[in-house]
Each structure stands twice: as C-alpha cells, then as structure tokens.
Length: 556
Image (cartoon, rainbow, N blue to C red):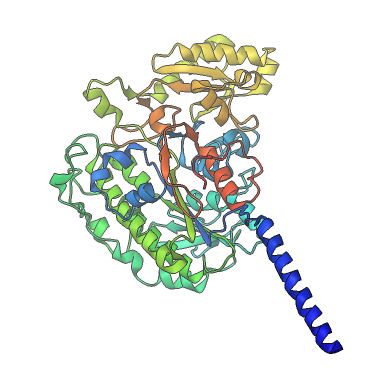
C-alpha cells in the first residue's frame, strides 16, 4: 500500500512538473537566430576593361537571358556608378575596385608614371626582383609591391587564416596582379607574341601547376587563331556606326576595317598570338582558363569562401583599335554576354545556385572617337601634346632662362625640379601658379590645378574633387592639366580614356547571388564603394585604406 502511494505521488509530481514546464514554454519567447554575415562558397569579381555603362543599355535587345540580363533580373543594378578620380586607366581602375580607395591612398596613379625620386618611368606592376614563371621572357617580372594598401582579396585571406583561396586571371598582367592583392594564391596572365602561354611570377610560385602546363599544351589557344565574323547578322547591328569608316584601325594587311577579319596573322596557328587580344576570342580564352582554375584549384567546394578575380581585357583592346561606335565593339559585347552565361551556368553546376556572389564593373569608360564627334558637329578634337610641349619649352626659356625647371610631362601632369627652382630662389608655390597660368592660356587646355591647391583644399564635387582623389602627394606631379571636353591626346582611330570627364567615369556595377537584393538605384555610387560593400556582406575587415562606403541598398 505504501509503495502504491509513493508511486501515485511520483506520477502526480511528474505530471505537475510537465504542466508547469509546458506553461513556461508557452510564455518564454523564442529567440530567432541572427545572421551577422553571408558565407558564399565563392565570390567572383569581374572587371570588364573599358566598359561604358551605356554598353549595357545600347546592346540590351541583343543580349540573351543568361548573361547581363540575368545579373540585372536576379541582382542589383547601380545605374549611376562612377570613378571618383582621374586618371581613369587600367592599373588605377583595378587597384581602386579591389582596395576600396583611390590613387591618393593606394598609390597606383597610372599604368605607368614618372617616379620623381628615381627620375625614371615605372610600371604599376613591374618588379625586377622577381622572375618569370612559365616562359623565358621578362613578361612575368611582376608583383603588387607598388600597391600601398590591402585589397578585399587580402582581407579575405587574413580573415580565413589563409584557408580561403584567391586566384586572379586576366590577359593583362596588371589585370591579374592588382586584383589578387598581396596575398593571392596565384595570379595568371597571357603572354602573346609568338608564345601564346599563360604565365605567372615567382612572387606567387616557383613553377606552374600541372593543370596550367596542360592547358598551355592543349591547343586551346591555337583554336582561337581564326577568322572573326559577327556572331549575328551584321545587318542587325543598328546600334553601331557603319562597318567601313575612317575612324577605325586596321589589322595587318587589311585595306578596310570591315568584317570578316581574316588576315594571315589571325589565321596563323604558330605565331602572333598577341592578335587574339584584339578579338572577342581573348575574352573566351580568359574564361576557358578561369574555369580550369575553378576546377583544378577546387574553388567554391567548401564552406570557407574563396575568391576568383576575372578581368576581361579584350574589350579594351577592341575599343582602342576600333572605337566606341564600331560594330566590332558591339560584336565583342554580344560574345561576352554568351561567355558570361557560360560562366554562370558553370557556377550553378559546380558551386551551386545561390551559393556564390558575383559583382561586375569596369576599370574605366572611354571617349567616342573625337574625329567622328567632330564630323557630327560635336565639340571634339585631338590635343597635340608635342606642340604644347614645344610652346611650353619656349615659355620656360623666357621666364626662367632654362628648361631645367621641368623634369617630366606625362599623364597630363607637369613634374618640376624642386632643386633647380630652389637654386633660382623661386618659391615653389609661385612657380606652380606661374606655370599653371601659362598652361591655362593654351587653347585645348580647359582647367589647371596645382599641387599646392591639392594640398591646401578639400574639394567635394566637380573636376577638382576627381583630380584630388587621383592626386598622391608622394607620386603625383606639381601641375595637373584637364583637356577640353571631347579632346584627348591619341591617334585618330579608335577610342581611349584617362580623363575626369563623365564618358570616362560612368561604368556599370552589377551584383547578384548570395546576400544581394534584387533592384536598382540611380543614386550616385562610386568605385571605392565596391570593396567595403563586399566586406560588409562577408563580415570581414575593410581593406586598410578604404575611403568608400558600403552600398546599403545592395545588401540583404
């Protein structure tokens, strides 16, 4: 009887406890899990060399559903995206996209620039202390040592204790070296000439991986030595100018710049692989190689985020040769659209839909051929730098009795010899202002600013704001020139870039994939905003020189 009572009391206690627990559970709020960062398996950064924003809209009706249109449909489109500095060229462009800042901070002030301390011209990626890997030439003597800050790719490597891989690929060395940052596992670029190989630098490795060697001997490069005709009926290319016009360059042995392009050096399988860069096949070759890197480096195969940086350089080569308004440029973008679709389909299959994040932008825009604009009654022309320098030399002789006051004129900058000016007992600020006023009087020079102005003022808009962001105190010149709108120093065929004008600064920014909202904005965004946006998405530290800010509309 006693045991029965004990058993009954125990059961009653258990039931009471259960009821109280259930009441407590009903009254206790459920704490939702918090996601502090996204963890895509792979980030793919795409830079399309010389892509103006209006290439997206101008050729829109010709694009398929899986390339540019997929990025806009499934992702976010920043319609008013700009470079906020000049010069707008490839080296500074790639450095700024990946560092989150401008040449004023990261130090890459041009593709080449005059080093006023060494009294010589330097190249943004050259490094004589390194050796070439993969070929016998000097084409691999490269490293990011002139880049003064970290990149988003560096920060990913630091954040993951180097477990996250970074691989960078481009036809141009600077298009791979600068995006890869200081800590990349590998950076590869294409040596054209009569070699036709993907190579690297001893900065990254002592020998090419076997998969790269296999690619180089596979015959894939030779497959792209072929005639270039339009991917669609050329009669449909109504968004471009006439095929035969005086504003375009010629391939060797061509008499007209017209399709099909099928010269002997395009068809040869044994030499002149450089010419591939000047066709859309260069972009296809770049993607072929990048997809091999994706596979053999096992990128995006685990929960630790990897980074694949791809720069499509042929768009720049074609633009320089044929110009903004050419059917060659249009065909190159239609073919690039197909390559983007191929990339995204591969990522879907290999990494997984919704498991990767992509951004696409450009390293600069481009001016329409000034000769063409001039013939359409648009104010435009060519800046004769030799005539300008000759006139300026006469001014120096008259004003100072010597030409030694100027050490170099390049990249629309004048570098003065401070020792000579000091020995002439001339105040440096006065010399800068005198020279600026002289140059401002030249017909094709629109604006002039001095280094003293860059030091003493904080500009927040307009041309001086753009110049100041490109002005590096230790590397830039004493006087900065701005040509008239529509004017440039270039040959009379093909397009170029480099100015602070809107045709050189307005470029696309498309993002899609994990952590990216769907939508668009016409609010101004700037190139240095890309890296901090990606850092905020990944939950990692911003690059150490960051001056941009995350684009909040983009992030989920």
